[in-house]
Image (cartoon, rainbow, N blue to C red; front, side, top):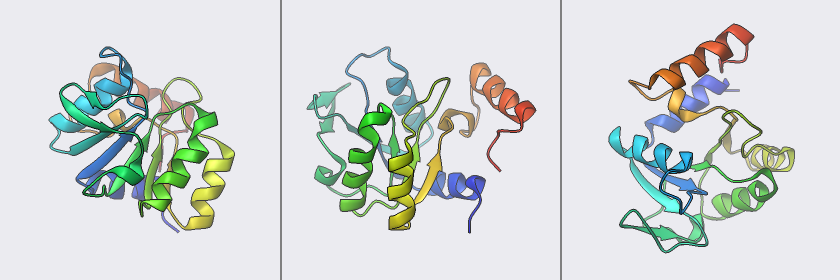
Length: 155
């Protein structure tokens, strides 16, 4: 069985990633994550059922609608929505799923984790991907340091 860090590394090797739950608000953290992935050479696809376009790019209502398909999905939704999003990812054939968690509870939910396990999907059960991108900003490096000190940094 792969470690969380191995799953993270595999996720970050994928080049086409859906970011699910991207806000329509330009200053929202989800938009910063989307920009950071783009700046690091990823091809990102925004997914938000309440938007058709974000920052000049097409936005999809669900992962299952994205064409061509994505290799992985970063889920940045409220925990109550995560199980439905994971079902959508699995229906689309996406088997690499990252349930975002920053300072709060994030997208992580037990039903979503159970669904990933049952389907054999590789899941990152929390953590912020910004900590793992090269040249992360100071706030993200501090976040990683705090998690290391608390013994909660993914291994």
